[in-house]
Amino acid sequence: MKEKIRKLAREKNAIILAHNYEPPEIQDLADLCGDSLELSIKASKTDADIIVFCGVHFMAETAKILSPDKKVLLPNPDAGCPMADMVTPEALLKRKEELSGIPVVTYVNSTAAVKAISDVCCTSANVVKIVRSLDAKEVLMTPDKNLAQYAAKHTDKKIHLWEGYCPFHNDMKKEDALKAREKFPGAILIAHPECPPETLEIADEIASTSGMITIARNSDKKEFIIATETGHIYPLKNACPDKIFHIASEKIYCRDMKKITPEMVLHSLETGFGEVDVPEDIRIKALGSVQKMLSAS
Ligand code: 13P
Ligand code: SF4
Image (cartoon, rainbow, N blue to C red; front, top):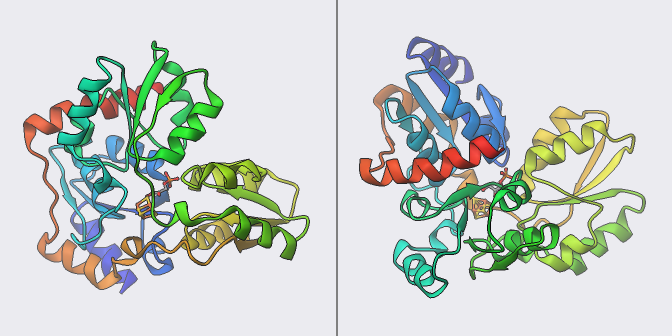
C-alpha cells in the first residue's frame, strides 16, 4: 500500500504532509511529518501540484490559504478539531467590539473565517514570540485559554482569554503528571502548552510537538515523560531510538487525528476526494494573519 501511494504521489506531483499525532502507518508514508508550524511553512514553500494533508481540517485549510493554486486534499473530510469549533466569527466579532481595538492573536487551530478577522496567527511553537512582537499592551487570544495563559506567563502583555481548550490536553491533570513522575523518577517531564497551567507549572520543559523532539534529541538524559497526545510517542521514538518515552496520560487520545487511513490517502490521490476550498474573500483576509505569523517566526 505504501509503495502504491508513494508511486501515485510521484506521478501526480503530490506532497504528503502528516502531523506528529497521526497513526504510524500514515507518518511512514508521508514526505514530511511535523508540528503545525513546520507543516504550514512546508505548505507555503512546496512546488507540488497537490498537497495531501494528513491531519485535521484547519491544517488543510491553512495549506489552502497559503497555496490557493494548489489542490489541497484532506483524505477524510470528517477529521476536525473540537477546539477550532469553540470560536465562531460571530462570537469573535462581538468580543472584539467589547474590547475595542486590541489585537487578536488566533491559534492556527481555528477556522479560516476566524483567522480572517484576527490580526495574527500563532502556533504552540511561536506563541510567545508572536505575542511579544505586538506593539500593544493588551491582546485577545483565541481559542485556547491554556495557550493564552502560557503566553501571559512568558510576556508582559495583559491577555484576555477565550474560553476554548483542547478537550484532551485540558484533561491532562497535574495529579496524573505527578503520578507519572513517581512511577518514572528521574525522567524529564515535557508538556504541551495546551495543557492546563497547573500541569505546565510542574513540567521541566514546555514545547510544541516538534519542539519536544528537539529537546529529547539534544538532551543528555535518557528518559522522558510526555504530556501530549499519545500518538506523539511514535515520532519521538523514531527520532531518538536510544531513549525511553512514557506517555503522561493515556487519556490524551485525539480521535480526529486517527481518522485517516492509508486506504483513504490512496482513494483521495486517485479521485481527488476530500478537496478543501476557502472562499477567496475569506482566504485573502486569513492569509494576512497567517503570513504575519510566518514572517515573525
Ligand atoms: P503542534 O504540533 O503544533 O504542537 O500542535 C498540537 C496540536 O494540537 C495540533 O492539533
Ligand atoms: Fe484539536 Fe486537541 Fe485534537 Fe489537536 S489534539 S486536533 S487541539 S482536539
